[in-house]
Image (cartoon, rainbow, N blue to C red; front, side, top):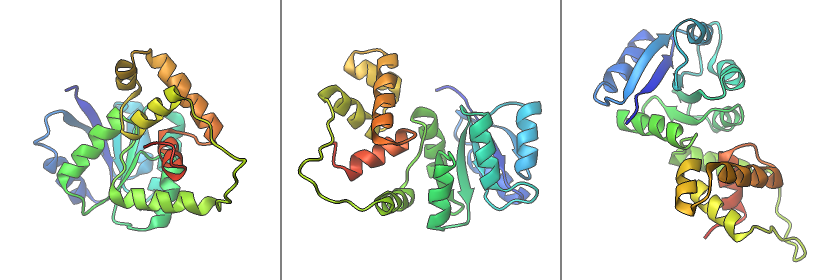
Amino acid sequence: MEQIRVAIADDHQIFRKGVILSMRGYTNIQFVFEANNGEELLQKIKEVEEPDVILCDLKMPVKDGIDTTKQITKEYPKVRVIILTMYEDERFVGHLMDCGAAGYLLKSTEPSEIKNAIQDVMRTGFYLNPFVNKVLIKKNYGKQKFNPSLSTEIIVTEREKEVLTLVCMEFTATEIALKMDISSRTVEAIKDRLMERFGVKNSVGLVFYAMKNHLID
């Protein structure tokens, strides 16, 4: 498996070192640098190396995790940000995912789950654990009330449904293309079409729209 370059931003050095040490057994994960706050993190991305994944705390001096996540997802769209924090607050989860975070973990998380999260965001673009799932489903349902109407029907073709099902199963565009014997470009075009039709911005939005509207079996 290819090396995944990881950076960590947290103002507690002991915690940073502990996370790095706990990941030492996973040979495909390489920590390229650590930062004390969001400002230092952004500077090191410019000066040292652009990581694949960032583990980012929320409460940090100088520049907090929220502003840092917003800036990174805007300036470095290929970099995946996983929030690693002590804040078990549903409001933070929903807001950070809206800001572009690829995952949200608590600091009590086992090293094996951090490893899984890092690998999943590299493979699918996001990591959803039961806590985040619950928050996002609640948030998604709360956005609008469902008014049943026999005249309103969401039309999804068989090919679109197959792509949507595989996206919900966390397959990448390349993996979906191989399974369906079509090009990756076609897969991305179908995903883009579905996102535009459903009014969502990313694969996470597709997953929850599909779940909410019972579009997959």
